[in-house]
Image (cartoon, rainbow, N blue to C red; front, side, top):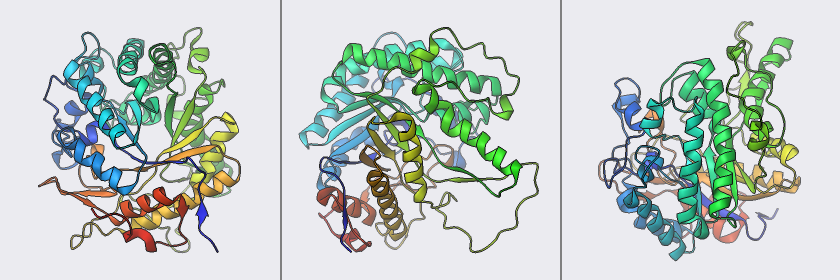
Length: 452
């Protein structure tokens, strides 16, 4: 057998998010975000961890870009901190904050790394949350102004701009379960937030195209197979409901379809947030769509007794997520069934694993995870999915939201005491694939590549 090859021009990169890596939360005029408030609230984040310092990328971005260049990546996906650009979410621009992203883009281009920008990765300015947050329409309108400001400054020099990362997580974890910032538990607010996030996307795309008409604009969704735990009709029904909320609620309106039936927990909630013309606004034509994939879910109806485990337990990551590479091809094919020839990117895919304390750069489980998922991506390509690139999550170990600094997703290890970076075998593996465009049949190239 010969190694399989990716198409010429395929994009290879790694991804990060502003609050998870930047630190410098009180420097150069940055305002408070909901994650600043949430992480400093006792009991919200494991071990009381915060993003105050994180990976200190704000001060170390040049070294991090140089690392990516040495590895052979040709792209980098990062998010902009809304509260760094507009400290209260609206009003006067904080030029010092916007200048940081200007410098970052310049540094990437100097190393021939294409910048892929995400405008919103969960860090809403706290002032906007105090005024109602995503459940109110004014937040979507404020987002449009913010999108236009960033696009006007960076748009001509970046490869693409995504409006919002994983709106499902924002609505579900932020406003339904309260597990993420801002920590609210209100089904009606969650449904309203879900709609206004999509309205913000539509308004944001319009603002991007007005400010930078040649720059591709899109959105990033998290998707995963929702498979019934058995053939029982109640399991089938439960899996369909989970599929509708996770996979269809955001994707279908983007392509001109109606919302699915509301999830059970929102039954009877008033839908006063919908206005005439909203669905057409949400379905503004896209230039690309990003897909974040981590695992599948085996759905058991709460009306049935738990299933007894059968056979060997599935392989799991350090987050206790099942390793299911075939699901990546499945979700890509599902998206392509809606979007046709629209270019797709795998904008996040990766796994957290415990650190080898004796050798933090050694991570064979992550190398295996990445190789098998890249194999699934090739399967999707061969089935006609218009896949254009792959971004590993994440470039660096970082602040993993409510889990704090416990889970380590980085292909580059970060010592949180010294902030020293160590290139892991998984980073060398990804660099070798990026440089050659070929996927090896095993993991032997994981230690090949340029020195750290």
